[in-house]
Amino acid sequence: MTPDELVWQFDLCWALVDLHLSALRPDDSLWEPAPLTWTVRPDASGVWRPDWADTEPDPVPVPTIGWLTWHITWWWSVTIDHVSGASPRARESVTWPGNGDVAVAGLRTLAAQWRNLLRTRTEADLAAPSSFPWSTASGRTVGHTALWVNVELTKNVAEIGQLRILRAAS
Image 1 (spheres, helix red, strand yellow):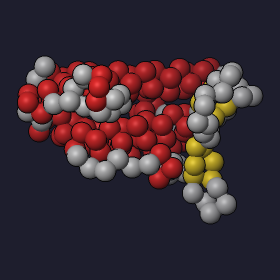
Image 2 (cartoon, helix red, strand yellow; image 1 turned 30 degrees about the vertical axis):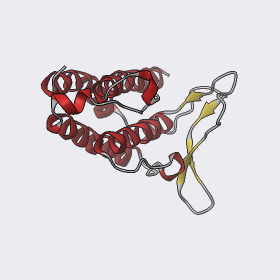
Image 3 (cartoon, rainbow, N blue to C red; image 1 turned 120 degrees about the horizontal axis):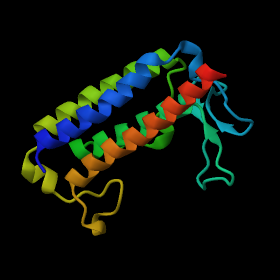
Image 4 (cartoon, rainbow, N blue to C red; image 1 turned 180 degrees about the vertical axis):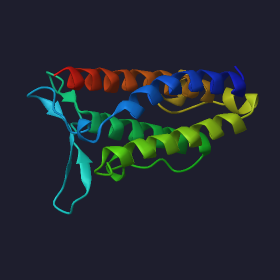
């Protein structure tokens, strides 16, 4: 695969992301669609933190759009750290901004960073072993990581889109 092919795939994915993010209303982020949800909420110091469990609960809570935008911010930031050679940030250090519009702006910034990172990779860079989001022993490459980002982003935005549509219809 080439950097141009990965950018093309990302841009295709981002068109879907942009469709749903552009349609969000300010009160969509914290709408709880079910009694059992994961959301984001301010802690005692006013920092917005996600609900979290190290072991996935059963049943799995329905995430809010706010939680999903935090989740994308978290895994995408960490992926960018890995691919660019930076020290990956800890999950606990990635917080939600407390505002849906600001969260969307943050996702747009990550998209620009990701697109630039893809454009500046060489085919040799993409063929290098990758340890994220899997182990180095998997034999997967930085190119596989880039493909995973595009699929994971598509999955997460489909969840956001479904929540947005359900909220609008309710």
